[in-house]
Each structure stands twice: as structure tokens, then as C-alpha cells.
Length: 167
Image 1 (tube, one colour):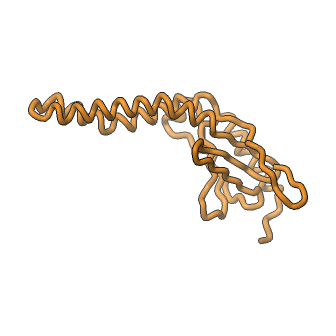
Image 2: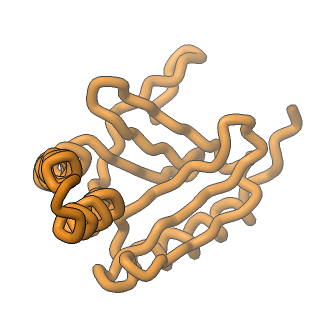
Image 3: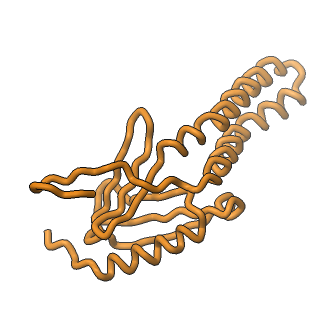
């Protein structure tokens, strides 16, 4: 962030997510697709009279889930960015509809690091920065777990040393 004559200009955040986030997102998509596909396929295999009505939707959903698992994570990896400065945490997500989330250091209430089972498998973590914003927390997903731990320590130090917002 740079300031000049009272305006704030944002440049794109510099940091990308860990490359392993692509695999993590792919597994999430494949598991989500498997939820409806597996029961439809099992029932289609067991109920001969309903086989066409069950296996066709299973095949369509499997193809759509696989296509999403192949394409979307690469796309997301190219567009998701994050950065922290002494003044704020900011995150950019989205491609068609880009969203920039900015959390001033003076407004940060908590910093959490979470590692779900799949994230642990991929060596990743999510850092959640909670503020008083009605929009909710700022989340940085797909970070190497060591980077996430360092980020949480750095944010804790910076927010501790930042005076609170008087507004």
C-alpha cells in the first residue's frame, strides 16, 4: 500500500499460495464429487431396472467433478494473492469477480492458524485474521504450515505494537 495526497493506492499483493494448494483443492473437488457419484453408481449397479437413470447422472457428475478438479485449482492458484505490511493484511481472490479484503492492523482482534486433515496431508495451513468487520474474517488458505506459523507470529507482533484505532 502506498499513500499520496490522502489516497491509498493498492498494488497487487506479492505473495502466492504454496503450490501444494493446487493438489489440496483438487482432492476437495474430487471428494465433493464423490459424495453424490458413489451412491448413484452403487445403486445403479445393484438395481438393474434403474441402472440407466442412476448411472447416467453418476457419469455426468463424475465428469463435471473431474473437470472442475483439473481446471479450477490451477485458475485459483493464478489469482489468489496475499501480503502483509506494517499497516494491513490484504488478500485478493477471484478471477471474474475479484475481491480484495484489507484488514488494518489496528482492527485485528485475533489471528488463528488451522490445519484440517487434508491440509495436514499436504503440509498446508490456513491463517484466519479476525477483525470487527461485518464482512467477516480475512482468510489466507493454502500456505505452507511453516509460513503460516511465521505469519501468525509476525501478525501477532505487529498488532501488539500497533496502537488501536480511535474510530
